[in-house]
Image (cartoon, rainbow over all chains, first blue to last red; front, side, top):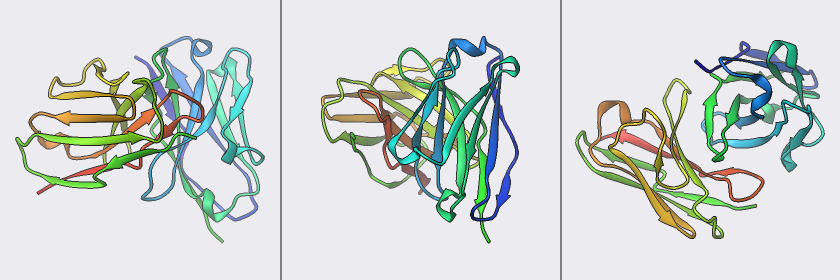
Length: 118
Length: 107
């Protein structure tokens, strides 16, 4: 069965960087793009963008241009999200998810809680 | 960006009750509207795609409808496992946007 398994929680200081991974299994990794979604504590879902798992080309939503980088380790069926120069407002749970042909986020990772605190 | 306004933000309801959650888009989205359920442990499950199509494995007590800018999710008879957060999401245009969520609580 299709699974997206994300890395563990992170506690970072402002200004540091973090890299989150999302390992896919149960399907051909390059068949579906990988999307990233942010959920701040007690808040709703915000789409961050996506990466074409075939070409490696990332697309970022406007609010996530600059400090956010989507990357792949295709041989390991893994997508990564790196956030640099962390700020308090980056404290959130970050989800990876695949999107099917009907635009539905059909499979989700379990989410990674990133806490930024001095 | 298309703004998605969900109402109500919270809804107390009883087991067996019929409930409807609304989602209004800031412009027409041509039925490109999906619904999700998020449990307290954070797990997110897709429920409905393209306004009214039930995702595989989702109970038939869930249904969706709407057109233009106005959409809704209905649960015909609440079960204990249905008390959760619900989000709508449009995919008519980028950026993909979600509603602010509706918390379905036990009355």
